[in-house]
Length: 237
Image (cartoon, rainbow, N blue to C red):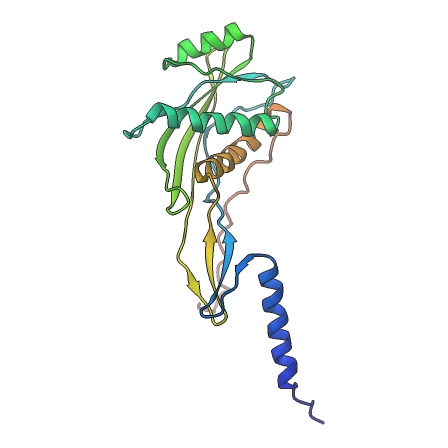
């Protein structure tokens, strides 16, 4: 006994319902003479942070910190302004996420060496110093791609020892408009792409420091997969 074939009208109804649910999650710009535009929020593309130095154990009590303006090593206009801007975004993100119970922002007008910054942090009465470098910054605004690469170092102000050293990078792309049968999809850029990228990178790196600072040591990475077993005697691959 064969099943009855699906009614073509029912099939079109399913397709129309699926399309309606998709469009409901996005903003649309309906048009009568051309394809409707569906705008989807662009997201920050990145990998996991690279960690070069990290502590072997967590502190007995959560530690306080001070951050100084990051140095922008790329030779572009408004180097100090952009470096200060990225630093502010990192400070705001780590303050929001409570990475440290007390987190000061020292807005120094003159760049300081690491020993000078460590001495100033010790004078401010905090436990740690946060420094950083922005090695690459491309600000494309709302019509171009934006990309940031930065590194962060954290020092113990009592000993001057480097406790953390890590690097991260990410980008947000305008992308190309993709045409479909009933509509065209395009990325919707945030009003401040530099803020969007910097805060995501800061949250990624800050999560690891938060776990350490409050005693939640993450487990070590899994060991590499073991090699496959040898073939049974008398059998070939």
